[in-house]
Each structure stands twice: as C-alpha cells, then as structure tokens.
Image (cartoon, helix red, strand yellow):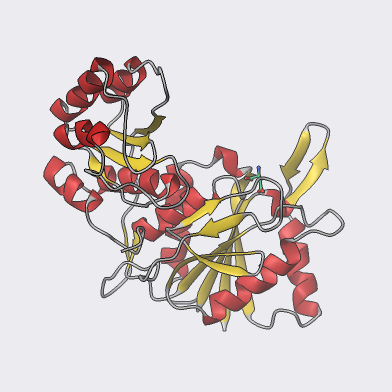
Length: 316
Ligand code: ASP
C-alpha cells in the first residue's frame, strides 16, 4: 500500500505564535514518522506540502486546483490520498474536489484537527491514523475523516467551531464519486460567485450588486424556500436572469433543504428561474456553482450541470 499525503496547512500542523496559531513545516511530517515508528500506520507514504502552508481561511480555488494536480500526478503511483487541511474551509475543499475530480479510481480522504499536534491532547494523531486507514480501505471518491467518522465529501459541513467532533454530513444514497472511465480533472477557472442571504428588512440592492458583479449567486432562502417578495428582490433576481447569472437557491436550515413551490412566498424564485438546490449544503452549492461556471461558458449547460446530481450532493 502506498499513500500520498498532500499537506496544505491548518491547525493540525500549527504552532502557537505571538499572533496566534500559524502553520509550521515539519509538524505533520514528525507525527507521521512517529506513527510509522510506533507501527500505527503501516502503509508506505510520500508527502508533498503546499508552499506556503496556509490557514484554510486563505484557501482559494487555485489551492483546490493545486490539490487536484497533486492527485492527478500521483494517481497511478498511489493507492489512496490523505489531504491534511484546515477545518474552517475543509467542507468547501471537499465539495470542490468531489465536483472537480471525475473518474477517481482511488479514495481521497481529507482530515485535519481542532487542536494542533503540538498541543497536549490533540485530536490530530487519531485523525491522521484514521485517515490513513480510510485511504487504504474506502471506496474511490472524496471523503472526510474526522473524529471517528468517515463522511461524504460533497455533503459535509463544519457544524461546531470548537469541539473535536466538528463535522456532520446528512445521509445520501450516492457515493462521493463522479463517474468517468478514467480520471479527468476539471480545474476551477477565474470565475466569481457570491453567497447572499435573505433577512427580514434586507436591502436587496446587495443582491442586485451581486447580479451585476458576479457570475453566479448562491441565495440562502428561508426554511423550505421562501423569500421576501418586495420589489427590490424581484428586480435583483430579474436582473440576474437577464444577465444569465445562475441563482442557486438553498436553505438557511442546516437540514431538510428547500422544496420550491411549497409556499406562495417562494413563487418569486421559480418565476425568476432560480435553481432548486434541494438539500445541498451552502459549501457544496458554492463549489458546484464555481464548477459549473468553470466547466462551460454556455448558460444552458451551466444550468444543466447545476440541476444534475453529480455525486450525491443532495439526498435523493
Ligand atoms: N483556522 C484553522 C484553519 O482552517 C482552523 C483549523 O484548522 O481547525 O486552517
């Protein structure tokens, strides 16, 4: 067994500094060496590190592309991949890889830690060990290993900001895997999208500005898909439609998703051509929007991608 470790940064490999925790080269490497010597990981591994290592707050689609390029380079040579990553945007990256890597033949397992390996009682060692096991045994696809759970890469969200058990993923009957005969990487391009939320008394000019300046909008609606029906939002959504800016509607509720057409107060979304995001997470909606915008210039094809369940990102 040969595992390729792709180290991007995050708390797992951080040390305390005067301005707070920051990544340091060698922390994850030293722990992997310790685990190997102790016989807690038995697979051979190679490690490639991002330069510089980052707090995942600074992750961008170019970092997703870098990770995908490492996976493509080592896809033949390795049996599985462990990606060490900060937890703050780990769910965005897991979703982005799920959409951008088609025809994966190996498991790709993202992990990290809530407490640095350099701190007493860190969860990093356990997560690393478990991630190695998952990279050796799991089905091909993009997974997140955290606090003893193996979670679906396109369904996962950070649900707690301080506990070790920080991630959740709602059930789905489809593996986090996009079908293709062989690995095909679809890189993220220089495209832009915004995540906007409706709120009581909101100023809809912000959504109008998003329609003017971004190529896609994730619209966080209420409950099962309602929005305030005022003229401002109507105009903004009509402007988005006129500019072929896709609006992907999702729920502000963490579970259950939207179901357009349930309430009359959501009719505006259907009238203006918003796309039903069902119970996709906000993170996966944003990554999927960037994926669709990057994959094609054609508005009809972009819409078709957004309306297709690519890898189990919504429940059924
Ligand atoms: N701020 C850190 C990061 O996302 C948090 C973590 O890794 O847990 O890189």
